[in-house]
Image 1 (cartoon, rainbow, N blue to C red):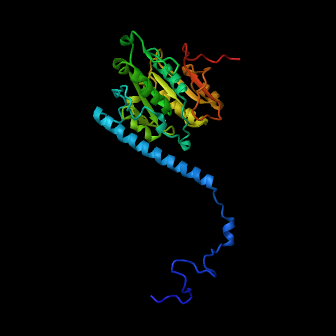
Image 2 (tube, one colour; image 1 turned 120 degrees about the horizontal axis):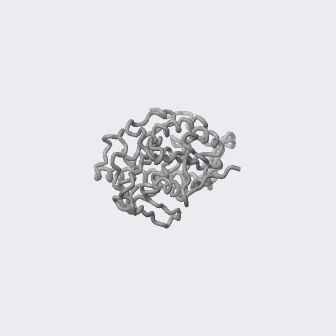
Image 3 (cartoon, rainbow, N blue to C red; image 1 turned 180 degrees about the vertical axis):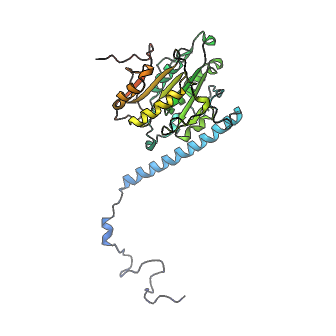
Length: 312
């Protein structure tokens, strides 16, 4: 190819011609382009590195969890038959699901994780009377001395993965195996990341399709713990439709907990009136805080856990 006669002979191809050597031509328009400061660039790089590290950690968690399920025979077969027999959870320092930190909150899904104390309080309510869970974080749970005579507890947890993780990975492993085998907890959750808990403990759930749940889950659960993802009346009412389908017909045993924003409190009280749900004195808290005032509504009081809020 013949050289371009318009290109200066002393300028190598691939560079821009300049009237003077070692000078840089600056387009005046470049002054209008916003530029990040060095500190901001460093923060952005740290964030990207942190995100990459979390992704790698989660991928490792998936692999380790899959290996555990394979070893336990917990396969995907029967995914529509949740929790016939729960995974044998034992105390294991290497349990990949023992730490909630690997699951980053997704604000697009309106995810806000509970503090350990809030998750523990809800767990204590769910497991009573089979297991006594002291609210002090450093206190061990204690099985009821007559646990063998007590019925199994079937617990449905809707859109509150922090509670499921804390119950199954921080409390149950501290109990004897015969007690653990009487507790069957299933997470109903839209975020498919939590399928790592295994098909016996996870059911994909979308509040926009409130009746789309496995037939085997209907009228099965003694305890239902709910944290609707959005503070709209539509979301609260549709979630309540699912709760009605999940609840056991045994009125003496069934318990309901709804944790949600104060702004929809009236909707909760109207929707769950047939179940005797009232606002409690307990205030759920979140790890990263929330601007919205949160409340805990429940169908029962329990000593040492919470009382109903007194009407003014």
